[in-house]
Image 1 (cartoon, one colour):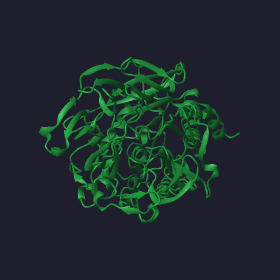
Image 2: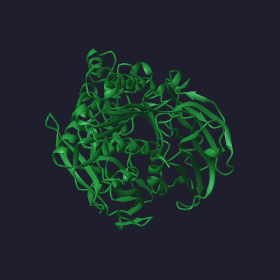
Image 3: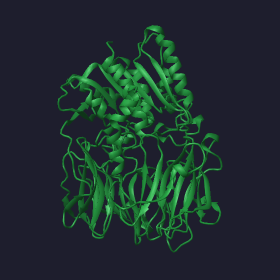
Image 4: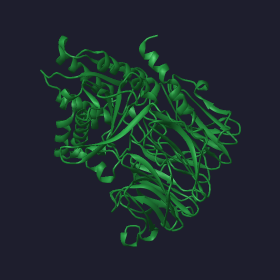
Length: 619
């Protein structure tokens, strides 16, 4: 067995254990769970009468035609009669919506093509149809999406009132519909259509500010927002005067934690927050009166798994009854478990026994960036690993995504068991420390993300945590840009770097069909933005005569977000510069793969590269 296969087997039980505790979601009076194989991306959707009894198969990729079918997402209708699934083929992210009748398992004739895998549909409150963000052609052919309404058995009709690609839909249980501008945890409500009305009414301008939670209660918006509160607050906003902030009522003021989501119960509001890199849950009365903080093991995290993309599906607190919330709880030394908490009885229960891996030790540290900013990071090792040790640094730092709250590092256990350690920074550009933490590293400030990374590695080395000359870095997607900056800006600081599914050519990014989404970097019509792209673009900053670290660029052949061509050019240029005497530069090009792969597919390859370069190499 080669080492990649061996590493895959070593992490198998951990990854399968994480997948096994994924929650079921309501399906009318029943329940549904989407189970994904972390090693090959195959999946099955099951339904049943209870959260822990979902034994009837609704759809499986093994039953679907075409090359490498993938179920990108599964969205149950509010009535529980139907399920919308996003299907794609052969690694592509061009997604077609199909609808399944739950009772018969029949796939209905309804089909809406050319959705982006990141944007699932939003059902109408009565289950008669859904909103979909779709284009006339695929992403590879110049996808330009509009928001449409599809009624079951009927046509798909573009709603011109809903604007362009940055519009996202929210439908409340009452039937009120909100059009929100933005992405992920960074939305602004711009339009509303009441359940008893036919016309869209204006709310806020798209540039008004950032909301991480939006709901409609009677004639008011209940919202979590960063407007006038860097770490977030909860406000109640009259719909008839939404643009007049003097009419807003503050329900829960800004505190010392960064709010990332809310759970609204009958008589309580529950906040999900980040405090110095770990999660906290607080409970308030519906009028905002503080009640208590949930007693969680410290440090705890609500993320399901270690790895790229954590934070994208916030909030991670789900109301599950008049006084109960559901969430996952875990930590660096605790695999995740499904949890329930009754806010009145103050009782925490878990569906699986809590287990602690006493081998793992995680400590919190802080570095200082060149401009004086504080950058927090976690250091994770096994108890019998005494530093300095070979270190893998893993970070993102973009799009307001919050990463590296405490979660069990199943993918990295083979590395830790061989005597390595993990350095997990929370860089500016991410959402771990508030709105300003994100905004500080956008447009012409992106260099701050890179400077934060360099400061953390220098700090970890100075503390004796990371072994000098044996430090690696891996960053995926936008984190791949940071990996490129690590290579081109501080090659002496890193011995091995993996830019994964990376953005390595900022100059060409707008011409690859994604420029309209990359609001992090600014706009092509501003010369100062273009100048900054050229200054930091990794492909354009490789120089002859520089001793670059060992590099493996991991890229998907059909990736439409970060195309394969710059990855090929980057590796070719590194090989030219290194010649026969330099460190290796290789391209791990994954055929029939887009922007995402299962953790069990990518991590064995990454660890094999790092073990070779950081543990086995003499230089």
